Image (tube, rainbow, N blue to C red; front, side, top):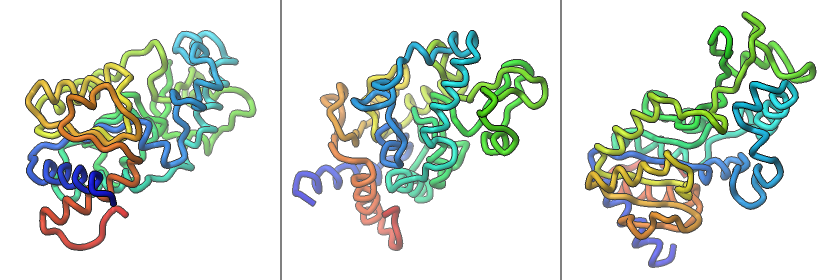
Length: 266
Protein backbone atom coordinates (compact mmCIF):
# COMPACT_ATOMS: atom_id res chain seq x y z
CA UNK A 1 0.00 0.00 0.00
CA UNK A 2 1.44 3.36 -1.03
CA UNK A 3 1.95 6.11 1.53
CA UNK A 4 -0.85 8.30 0.15
CA UNK A 5 -3.34 5.42 0.05
CA UNK A 6 -2.38 4.35 3.55
CA UNK A 7 -2.85 7.89 4.82
CA UNK A 8 -6.33 8.24 3.31
CA UNK A 9 -7.36 4.75 4.46
CA UNK A 10 -6.27 5.56 8.02
CA UNK A 11 -8.06 8.92 7.90
CA UNK A 12 -11.28 7.25 6.74
CA UNK A 13 -10.95 4.59 9.43
CA UNK A 14 -10.48 7.31 12.04
CA UNK A 15 -13.66 9.03 10.88
CA UNK A 16 -15.53 5.72 11.12
CA UNK A 17 -14.16 4.88 14.56
CA UNK A 18 -15.20 8.29 15.89
CA UNK A 19 -18.65 8.45 14.27
CA UNK A 20 -21.94 7.52 15.94
CA UNK A 21 -24.32 7.52 12.94
CA UNK A 22 -22.71 6.28 9.72
CA UNK A 23 -24.55 6.13 6.40
CA UNK A 24 -23.03 4.23 3.49
CA UNK A 25 -24.25 5.32 0.05
CA UNK A 26 -23.51 2.85 -2.76
CA UNK A 27 -23.72 2.96 -6.54
CA UNK A 28 -23.01 0.88 -9.61
CA UNK A 29 -19.27 0.75 -8.95
CA UNK A 30 -19.94 -1.74 -6.16
CA UNK A 31 -22.17 -3.96 -8.32
CA UNK A 32 -19.85 -4.07 -11.34
CA UNK A 33 -17.24 -5.85 -9.24
CA UNK A 34 -19.80 -8.65 -8.81
CA UNK A 35 -20.09 -8.95 -12.60
CA UNK A 36 -23.27 -6.88 -12.97
CA UNK A 37 -23.08 -4.58 -16.00
CA UNK A 38 -23.19 -0.84 -15.43
CA UNK A 39 -25.90 1.08 -17.27
CA UNK A 40 -24.16 4.41 -17.89
CA UNK A 41 -20.43 3.77 -18.23
CA UNK A 42 -18.76 3.46 -21.66
CA UNK A 43 -19.50 -0.04 -22.88
CA UNK A 44 -22.41 -0.29 -20.43
CA UNK A 45 -25.99 -1.24 -21.14
CA UNK A 46 -27.05 2.15 -22.49
CA UNK A 47 -24.27 2.06 -25.06
CA UNK A 48 -25.92 -1.07 -26.50
CA UNK A 49 -29.60 -0.27 -25.92
CA UNK A 50 -31.65 2.89 -26.35
CA UNK A 51 -32.77 4.18 -22.93
CA UNK A 52 -35.93 5.48 -24.60
CA UNK A 53 -36.97 1.85 -25.04
CA UNK A 54 -36.96 1.44 -21.26
CA UNK A 55 -39.49 3.99 -20.06
CA UNK A 56 -42.54 3.08 -18.00
CA UNK A 57 -44.70 4.41 -20.85
CA UNK A 58 -43.22 1.99 -23.39
CA UNK A 59 -43.45 -0.82 -20.86
CA UNK A 60 -47.18 -0.25 -20.41
CA UNK A 61 -47.94 0.33 -24.07
CA UNK A 62 -46.09 -2.51 -25.79
CA UNK A 63 -45.97 -6.24 -25.04
CA UNK A 64 -42.89 -6.48 -27.28
CA UNK A 65 -41.10 -3.82 -25.21
CA UNK A 66 -42.11 -5.52 -21.97
CA UNK A 67 -40.51 -8.75 -23.15
CA UNK A 68 -37.35 -6.90 -24.23
CA UNK A 69 -37.07 -5.19 -20.84
CA UNK A 70 -37.61 -8.44 -18.94
CA UNK A 71 -34.96 -10.21 -21.02
CA UNK A 72 -32.41 -7.45 -20.50
CA UNK A 73 -32.88 -7.41 -16.73
CA UNK A 74 -32.77 -11.19 -16.43
CA UNK A 75 -29.80 -11.71 -18.75
CA UNK A 76 -27.83 -9.18 -16.69
CA UNK A 77 -27.61 -11.81 -13.94
CA UNK A 78 -29.35 -9.60 -11.40
CA UNK A 79 -31.73 -12.28 -10.16
CA UNK A 80 -29.67 -15.33 -9.29
CA UNK A 81 -26.10 -15.23 -10.57
CA UNK A 82 -24.47 -12.29 -8.82
CA UNK A 83 -22.74 -12.74 -5.48
CA UNK A 84 -21.58 -10.12 -2.97
CA UNK A 85 -17.99 -8.98 -3.35
CA UNK A 86 -15.48 -7.76 -0.76
CA UNK A 87 -16.97 -4.25 -0.73
CA UNK A 88 -20.43 -5.58 0.15
CA UNK A 89 -18.92 -7.80 2.84
CA UNK A 90 -16.96 -4.89 4.34
CA UNK A 91 -20.12 -2.76 4.55
CA UNK A 92 -21.96 -5.66 6.22
CA UNK A 93 -19.09 -6.03 8.69
CA UNK A 94 -19.44 -2.36 9.65
CA UNK A 95 -23.00 -3.16 10.70
CA UNK A 96 -21.81 -6.18 12.71
CA UNK A 97 -19.30 -3.88 14.46
CA UNK A 98 -22.14 -1.55 15.43
CA UNK A 99 -20.79 1.23 13.20
CA UNK A 100 -23.57 1.46 10.60
CA UNK A 101 -26.81 3.40 10.74
CA UNK A 102 -27.99 2.34 7.27
CA UNK A 103 -27.10 1.68 3.64
CA UNK A 104 -28.63 3.84 0.92
CA UNK A 105 -28.17 2.22 -2.47
CA UNK A 106 -28.84 3.01 -6.10
CA UNK A 107 -28.37 -0.68 -6.92
CA UNK A 108 -31.22 -3.12 -7.57
CA UNK A 109 -29.35 -6.39 -7.01
CA UNK A 110 -30.09 -7.22 -3.33
CA UNK A 111 -26.38 -7.86 -2.75
CA UNK A 112 -26.14 -5.85 0.46
CA UNK A 113 -28.73 -8.13 2.03
CA UNK A 114 -26.99 -11.21 0.65
CA UNK A 115 -23.74 -9.97 2.20
CA UNK A 116 -25.35 -9.78 5.63
CA UNK A 117 -26.81 -6.30 6.04
CA UNK A 118 -30.18 -6.24 7.79
CA UNK A 119 -32.95 -5.66 5.21
CA UNK A 120 -34.43 -2.97 7.44
CA UNK A 121 -31.19 -1.01 7.24
CA UNK A 122 -31.00 -1.03 3.40
CA UNK A 123 -32.92 1.67 1.51
CA UNK A 124 -33.15 0.85 -2.20
CA UNK A 125 -33.76 4.10 -4.07
CA UNK A 126 -34.16 2.45 -7.47
CA UNK A 127 -36.11 -0.61 -6.32
CA UNK A 128 -35.07 -4.25 -6.38
CA UNK A 129 -34.93 -7.09 -8.90
CA UNK A 130 -35.72 -9.47 -6.05
CA UNK A 131 -39.44 -8.98 -6.63
CA UNK A 132 -42.05 -8.36 -9.32
CA UNK A 133 -45.35 -6.60 -8.79
CA UNK A 134 -48.68 -6.96 -10.61
CA UNK A 135 -49.95 -3.65 -11.94
CA UNK A 136 -53.52 -4.99 -11.76
CA UNK A 137 -54.03 -6.61 -8.35
CA UNK A 138 -50.74 -5.29 -6.82
CA UNK A 139 -49.67 -8.77 -5.68
CA UNK A 140 -45.91 -8.98 -5.11
CA UNK A 141 -43.94 -12.05 -6.14
CA UNK A 142 -40.44 -13.27 -5.39
CA UNK A 143 -38.53 -13.45 -8.69
CA UNK A 144 -37.19 -16.84 -7.73
CA UNK A 145 -40.70 -18.19 -7.15
CA UNK A 146 -42.03 -16.50 -10.27
CA UNK A 147 -39.47 -18.09 -12.58
CA UNK A 148 -40.06 -21.49 -11.07
CA UNK A 149 -43.57 -21.16 -12.51
CA UNK A 150 -42.92 -19.51 -15.86
CA UNK A 151 -40.36 -18.69 -18.56
CA UNK A 152 -40.06 -15.92 -21.13
CA UNK A 153 -40.57 -18.30 -24.04
CA UNK A 154 -44.21 -17.27 -24.39
CA UNK A 155 -43.68 -13.56 -23.79
CA UNK A 156 -43.44 -11.31 -20.76
CA UNK A 157 -44.79 -13.00 -17.62
CA UNK A 158 -48.33 -12.30 -16.41
CA UNK A 159 -49.72 -12.30 -12.90
CA UNK A 160 -50.58 -15.87 -11.79
CA UNK A 161 -53.58 -14.49 -9.88
CA UNK A 162 -55.26 -12.09 -12.31
CA UNK A 163 -53.30 -12.26 -15.61
CA UNK A 164 -52.34 -8.62 -15.12
CA UNK A 165 -49.07 -7.05 -16.30
CA UNK A 166 -46.13 -8.01 -14.10
CA UNK A 167 -43.42 -5.40 -13.68
CA UNK A 168 -40.00 -5.89 -12.07
CA UNK A 169 -40.07 -3.95 -8.79
CA UNK A 170 -37.47 -1.49 -10.06
CA UNK A 171 -37.77 2.15 -11.09
CA UNK A 172 -38.15 2.70 -14.82
CA UNK A 173 -37.49 5.99 -16.61
CA UNK A 174 -40.52 8.20 -16.02
CA UNK A 175 -41.35 6.77 -12.58
CA UNK A 176 -40.98 8.44 -9.21
CA UNK A 177 -38.56 6.98 -6.70
CA UNK A 178 -40.24 4.90 -3.97
CA UNK A 179 -41.61 7.50 -1.59
CA UNK A 180 -40.83 5.80 1.72
CA UNK A 181 -37.32 4.69 0.75
CA UNK A 182 -36.50 8.22 -0.44
CA UNK A 183 -37.96 9.79 2.72
CA UNK A 184 -35.92 7.47 4.92
CA UNK A 185 -32.76 8.08 2.88
CA UNK A 186 -33.08 11.86 3.17
CA UNK A 187 -33.85 11.61 6.90
CA UNK A 188 -30.84 9.41 7.65
CA UNK A 189 -28.53 11.51 5.46
CA UNK A 190 -29.55 14.69 7.29
CA UNK A 191 -28.96 13.13 10.71
CA UNK A 192 -25.73 11.18 10.18
CA UNK A 193 -22.31 12.34 11.33
CA UNK A 194 -20.45 10.48 8.55
CA UNK A 195 -21.59 9.55 5.06
CA UNK A 196 -19.38 7.23 3.01
CA UNK A 197 -19.94 7.17 -0.76
CA UNK A 198 -18.83 3.84 -2.24
CA UNK A 199 -18.77 3.19 -5.98
CA UNK A 200 -20.93 6.08 -7.15
CA UNK A 201 -20.03 8.83 -9.58
CA UNK A 202 -22.82 10.95 -8.03
CA UNK A 203 -24.43 11.94 -11.32
CA UNK A 204 -27.91 10.40 -10.88
CA UNK A 205 -30.36 12.61 -9.01
CA UNK A 206 -32.15 12.83 -6.63
CA UNK A 207 -30.08 9.96 -5.16
CA UNK A 208 -26.85 11.96 -5.49
CA UNK A 209 -28.21 14.64 -3.17
CA UNK A 210 -27.57 12.39 -0.15
CA UNK A 211 -23.95 13.53 0.46
CA UNK A 212 -25.13 17.12 -0.08
CA UNK A 213 -27.74 16.72 2.67
CA UNK A 214 -25.15 15.16 4.97
CA UNK A 215 -22.59 17.91 4.39
CA UNK A 216 -25.17 20.66 4.85
CA UNK A 217 -26.04 19.11 8.23
CA UNK A 218 -22.41 19.20 9.33
CA UNK A 219 -21.48 15.55 8.72
CA UNK A 220 -18.15 14.40 7.33
CA UNK A 221 -18.18 12.84 3.85
CA UNK A 222 -15.76 10.21 2.55
CA UNK A 223 -15.72 9.04 -1.07
CA UNK A 224 -14.38 5.72 -2.36
CA UNK A 225 -14.79 5.64 -6.13
CA UNK A 226 -12.73 4.60 -9.12
CA UNK A 227 -13.11 7.97 -10.87
CA UNK A 228 -13.39 11.63 -9.91
CA UNK A 229 -16.80 12.93 -8.83
CA UNK A 230 -18.13 16.49 -8.80
CA UNK A 231 -18.35 16.24 -5.00
CA UNK A 232 -14.69 15.34 -4.44
CA UNK A 233 -13.67 18.92 -3.57
CA UNK A 234 -16.28 19.05 -0.79
CA UNK A 235 -15.45 15.66 0.73
CA UNK A 236 -13.29 15.29 3.84
CA UNK A 237 -11.42 12.35 2.33
CA UNK A 238 -11.35 10.90 -1.20
CA UNK A 239 -9.89 7.57 -2.29
CA UNK A 240 -9.81 6.72 -5.98
CA UNK A 241 -9.77 2.96 -6.34
CA UNK A 242 -11.89 -0.16 -6.67
CA UNK A 243 -14.44 -0.53 -3.90
CA UNK A 244 -13.63 -4.23 -3.45
CA UNK A 245 -9.97 -3.42 -2.86
CA UNK A 246 -10.27 -0.25 -0.77
CA UNK A 247 -13.15 -1.13 1.56
CA UNK A 248 -11.41 -4.21 3.10
CA UNK A 249 -8.35 -2.02 3.80
CA UNK A 250 -10.56 0.52 5.53
CA UNK A 251 -12.28 -2.24 7.50
CA UNK A 252 -8.95 -3.62 8.70
CA UNK A 253 -7.89 -0.14 9.83
CA UNK A 254 -11.23 0.38 11.60
CA UNK A 255 -10.73 -2.86 13.52
CA UNK A 256 -7.26 -1.76 14.56
CA UNK A 257 -8.69 1.53 15.79
CA UNK A 258 -11.41 -0.26 17.73
CA UNK A 259 -9.09 -2.95 19.05
CA UNK A 260 -11.09 -5.69 17.34
CA UNK A 261 -9.36 -8.94 16.47
CA UNK A 262 -10.50 -11.74 14.15
CA UNK A 263 -11.41 -12.19 10.48
CA UNK A 264 -12.49 -9.47 8.13
CA UNK A 265 -14.34 -9.05 4.84
CA UNK A 266 -11.27 -9.97 2.80
